[in-house]
Length: 272
View 1 (tube, rainbow, N blue to C red):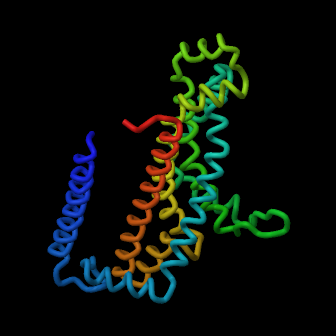
View 2: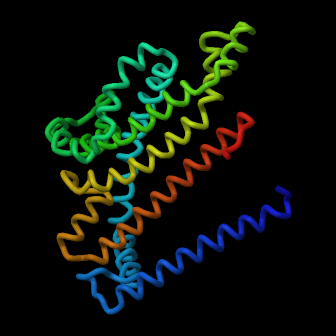
């Protein structure tokens, strides 16, 4: 693509995306015309509710709580899932050992684990060097995020390593590249695009799950905001929280997309 074409393409994407938002908001307004805050609110009532939540600071605290839990669960899942996925992809006996259990547990919705998470982590305050990292309510939500993120990550990583063509491994062996050097120079570059895709998918799933996880057993977070507002018949606050959930999810996806593009660019690769 030439330099003269790039700005036009960017503006086209921006224009079409903006038009889609405008049309959606217009349809929303038409569908909710005349409703009050105890019914499905329109865009204007939602905006007013959003302003109220942002002004008193509740919104920012709930965003921070949700992002905190997602970050912990996602990082724990990546820290375990990527090494395990590489090991499974590299060693046939390991994949035969773990894969049946993983494939059996993978279809189980993380939401189904909520009762067990509350029981298991009901009194668990996790500590490090005498300082509390997260309390009991955080622990159960983080556990659910871990489950939601772990299976896409380990599955994508295993598939990425197993799909590396043998000719690359043989070429590396001919040049005496083994061990850590083989992982750093051959396996990681070849598997990186698919691993990053798995991470991006896992983060999206994690953000969906945290909202449901926070509707039970916690007193903060965007999921709690939705549930608490519904109980108080403040449907404008419910809609405002839903808008924020979507915007934060979009921001997280864009951040992962940029990270993916940057990581691939440093290795001389690009996304298709």
